[in-house]
Length: 298
Image (cartoon, rainbow, N blue to C red; front, side, top):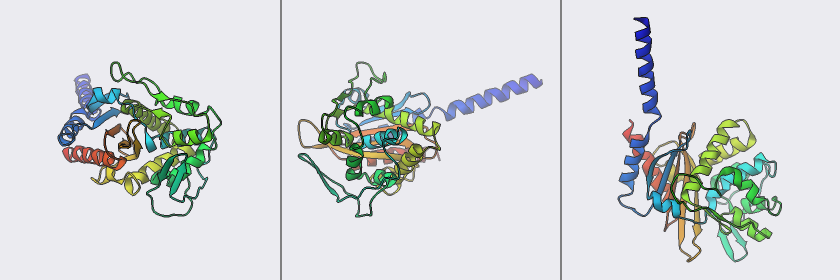
C-alpha cells in the first residue's frame, strides 16, 4: 500500500511539473489574439531550458528575414565585452544625444543626463556609449565576440533558414556602426532568439559576475522605465531591449524587441520583429502578449 501511495504521489508531481513546464497553449493563444491586427509581425517565443519554440507567428517568414539588428545587439556585446575584460561596467561616457558616424545620424532619445555607466547606457540605449565601447575592440575582433552567442549561426529551429550576413569591419567607423547594429550585420529573428537564450543561460550560470549583474539590471531598467518600457506596461515581469534600424533597400525602419520573462527567473525568450515600424512598436506587441498570458493564468 505504501508503495502504491508513493507511486500515486510521484505521478501527481510529474503531472504538475509537466503542466508548469509546458506553457505553449497560453503563449500561442496570446500570440494569435495579438496578431489579428498586425499579421505581418514576426514573433518567436522559445523555452529557455531546452530552446524549443513554444509559440510563433510567421515562423517561415521569420526564418528568412535578414535585417539589421539595431540596438538589440547591444546587450550581447556588452556582456561579452565585460566578460572578456575588454570593457569595465563602471566606465562612464558622456552623451551629446546627437552622434554622427560617417553618413549616419544616430540621435539618442533619452533625457539629458550625467555621463552613463554600462547599466544606465543599456537602459537608455545610449548610442554614444556603445560607439565609445567599440573603440576598445581590436580589428577583426567583433566576430569572435559575437560567435559564442549563436547570433551568427544556423539555429535549427526552421528548415532552410537564412543565416546571418556579417562582414568584419575594416575601420573604426565600420566597427562602431556594426556594434550599434546599423550596418555590416543582418540577422534573423530566430538567431536573435537563440542569442538571447544564450544570454539568459550565461547570466544564470554566472549570476555573481559583473557582466551578468550589469546586463540583467540594465535590461530590467529598460522595460521598467527606459527605452523598452512598452513591454512592461501590462504589469508582466520582463527584461528586454528594443532596436530600430533602416533596411538596406530603403530608409523605412523596422523594429525589434528581444526579452526574457519573467525578469527575475527567465523561463522564455520572446522576440518580436515589426517589418515597418520602430523598436517601441515591437515592445508594445510583446507587452500585449505578456499581458494576455498573465491574465490567462490568474
